[in-house]
Length: 393
Image (cartoon, rainbow, N blue to C red; front, top):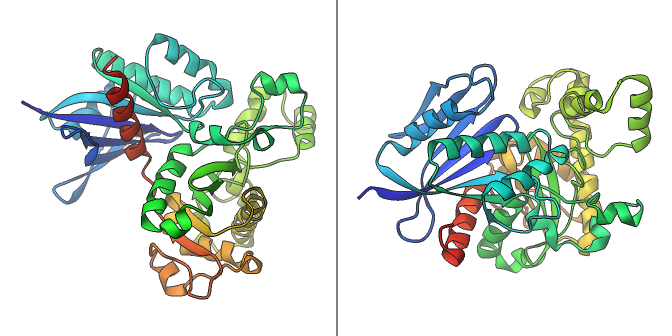
């Protein structure tokens, strides 16, 4: 009999991460991982026999359609597996979804209704779900929501200063990157329980970036709000911006909300400040003043958000870096540290340069860690949990 596996698909705005997990023993153990890089020439990168393989994928008019998913799963499954489930990351769950769920017509429709709040991510995930149903109509599919981890936040953290009826209708702060924070929280509580159960600020720094303040592994406050535009500056998104600026831009620069939305998602952030790139690595290698200013602003705003979250959680026992930037760029971590010496943060220079797990110097008043995130593991674990609890729907 073929080995039973679970497939976890993490759909981002510009890539897909796919994890293949052996679930034959009742838990999810990773056996293979691949990344689909999207664009004009989509391609799949994965490891085979100790070597990184890369293949081109068919360009689909509908983005990530049946052709792409079929090619990717054929490569990663290698024909020796029976699919037990396919789990998906969904960015926005709104007020509807507070935990993982099975996917059916009604749930998919509800996810689609939330697209205006996550216009880059929600359509991509829905395309992938449709493609999987076309290829494997009888396979169980589940959804895990980035917003669900933050549903523990109190009303003060979630509320915007707008009329109550609007808040009750769903215009409020949600928070994102919840699957990442859930993984990091669980890892830290096992790795360093003395601080993992305390007051922790986690910085998920990547193309999209946010921070989360946690107490005893539970989300108390986070930098992102109603949408993935909020909080700290990102690659091409501005982060927090004065609403008056948006009114001004609608009156002077953009004829409608769609054009403004495109501007905010694709032309701001590090790209907008530097005029060079939204990629922090490219900016680190560029010595023009505008590149330096973009990086300085990035670090400054992150440090400021850590200070704000310290108020929400009553202090900081530990700081965690994760995400592509947080895990691999010592210069960014060092830039953040420069603004936090008042808080007692001191990084060990050698540990920081080598991307060690424990980053803080002995004299630091705050513990600091680098924890590579694993959203696919969370997706697989959540899928198995609801299947175990409710059976295969």
